Amino acid sequence: MRAEVRWIEGLKFLGKTDSGHTIVMDSPEESGGENLAPTPMEITLSALGGCTGMDVISILKKMREEVTDFLIVINAERRTEHPRVFSAIELVYRFRGKNLKRENLEKAVKLSYEKYCSVGAMLKISCPITYKIEVITD
Image (cartoon, rainbow, N blue to C red):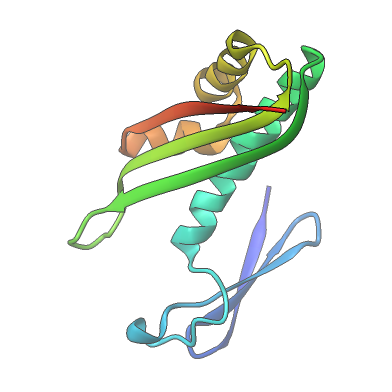
């Protein structure tokens, strides 16, 4: 796997992946940027959500669970001193669907957390990651 990150101007950068996709990064105005794109740390949290979300949906499809809506809310704390790494992360998995079996939801999330999510595996080495599951039935 390989990526390139090119400076655009100010604190804006353009990342390009091996698969040809791009993502713009910027910094907030108070840090000298223009706040025109997410910060690298925001992208990291989004990557965590995307990684675990893909795992969970794939597992639930195999279990034939009928999920109609799925949202992951990710809350993170950061150290106040540099480097301002994450000190704690909480994921809230919100599922909506018909006749969802809570035990299947819990199993899918646990498998992602313990076995499949590469982003989560890297992050939990440096900070605790907790999660909870919320279910809304149709």
